[in-house]
Image (cartoon, rainbow, N blue to C red; front, side, top):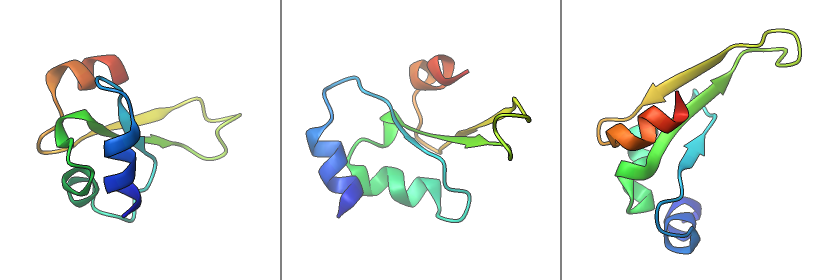
Length: 70
């Protein structure tokens, strides 16, 4: 229900990013009702030392959302 609520409440065009590597990003995206707006962003640990970010594209992540995340 959290993703569904987030998808309904976030303004149009807002990117919904998840940092989970355990949960399926595509399932989260579908649950939001806005799969095109969902992307995964995984910070390496510890984030203050490892200044790396993995960008994960979902099956339906839009090219615009991906480009913004990159």
